[in-house]
Each structure stands twice: as structure tokens, then as C-alpha cells.
Length: 211
Image (cartoon, rainbow, N blue to C red; front, side, top):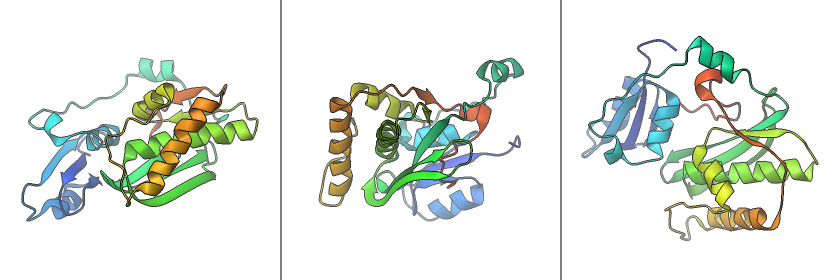
């Protein structure tokens, strides 16, 4: 990544999302009253911020983070005997979808959506549970990667703790949430869930590539 590269999170604007250039960000907030946006040094930080609130980042300086050679060596390489899952949401809430892929080949193994209304955290949670069910169904010993600590936490608790309220518009998403929670409560699994090391390995293979 170039030293001057930044990612721009737009919470409120003509089209909320994450942008890779100031030009794109500016177009998303131009003449928008009360626009909320901020730059971040990495996509991971911008994505995490987008899933939170503007007020939590307003006025705070962002720090450029990088890994040392020692840290990279300690982390090592990805385990390619695995699948990777990820989600994408245009807005928060907004149009959401998720998928799972083979980590090495990036071959798509499953995909759901797009749904009219969801959040990235919900998508990450559903993707992770779908991945667990997929691997159990295929009697696979592969591990599963996710870049979402929130999704990992929700899976451990067997509960989707989203603040999004159920409505007619997102009924299909909430039906999937209930199905996922029920699966976690009624199934056991031996699959190891591992956090994808974005800073060391780049974007997770299941990433939708919408920067």
C-alpha cells in the first residue's frame, strides 16, 4: 500500500459506504447537509468504523498501523485447507449479501442475497454460520476464516446481537437470523474458526472487492 493511500468512510451522504479515493468520497458527500465522513489508513479500520458510529470517531486522529517483519513471520501464511466467508453492505443498514469461498482458489461455494435491508455485521454472522453448516454437511475438516471479530463473538454466544429492528422490509433477513441461531443451538461442530489477518495477508478471499 502506498503511504498516501487512504480509505474514506461515509456514514451520512448521498451514498454511505467506504471509498478508496478522496474524489469518490467527495462525490458521495458534496452538497449533502450534515454529511459524516472520515479517512482511515487501512480498509479494515474503515470497515470497522463504518459498522460503528460517526460520533465514536469524530475528532479522533487515526494512526497508521503496519506489521514488523517479526510479526509477519509469527503470523505466518494462511492455512489453505480452509474456506473463507465475508459480507458486503451498501449502507448501514442497506442492501446486504454474503458468501463463502475456497480460500486458495477463491471458488465460490455458497452465496446469499442481495437482501433489501441488512447490515454488514449481520451478513458476517450469517456467512459464518452458513459456513459452519456447509462444512458439517460435507464432513469437512477444513477450518473457516472470517475477518469479523463481531461475528465470531455472536457465534460463540449463539445470538445475533444486531440493533436492527425487524420489519416487513427485512423479514427475509430476520428469518435467516432465526434459522442461524437455531442451528447453533441444536448442532455441535468441530470446525475451528480463525480470524483472517488482513494486515498480513490482504483482503480475505471472500471479499466482494467494493472499496
